[in-house]
Image (cartoon, rainbow, N blue to C red; front, side, top):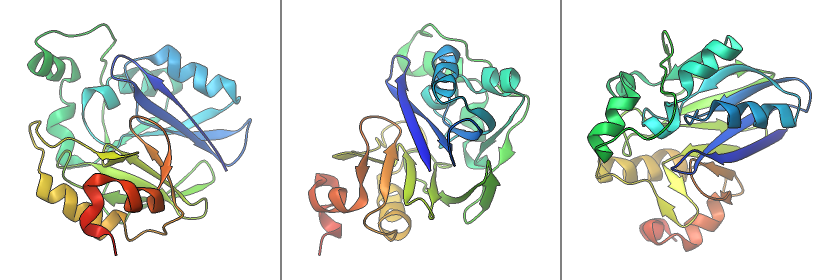
Length: 216
């Protein structure tokens, strides 16, 4: 399987493309407000997207969703518990930062709903939806068992975890999600996070300071 990512926009948000091989269909995971960067990522491998999966509703992960769904004529998927965040990504940034940074924050006409345990068959891939509330109420990770890959969004980073001090965040919920739904996956799973470099579950369980309670 091919996976590749780029850190885009001001927040350095990772946009990942997943595909069985080069020169074919692909799935986009997360859409920073940088449509040109997403298009370049796809062109690099001659890929044609068939869907956009959003790990959660923060603007740095869905700000470009409207442009992607319109430009590539694909559907966008989001857990309904984050619908309130997706109503106006620009206003979300205004509330957090006081200003709206440069970017085109067009919204999709509609979001397809994700739910825990759902298995999506897209672009020749089998993608399991894992609802991991905590960073946001509707946060989801996307697990590709055959490839041993987890798109963790802002649930888990190399050496850290997602913040929970924003509206809708819940540290206790995030840690429950971690123990019950993330760290139960195979330890050699490659983690593709929403920010920063790739890692593995084994490495994070062993060295991530926020996961000390889960070490045996």
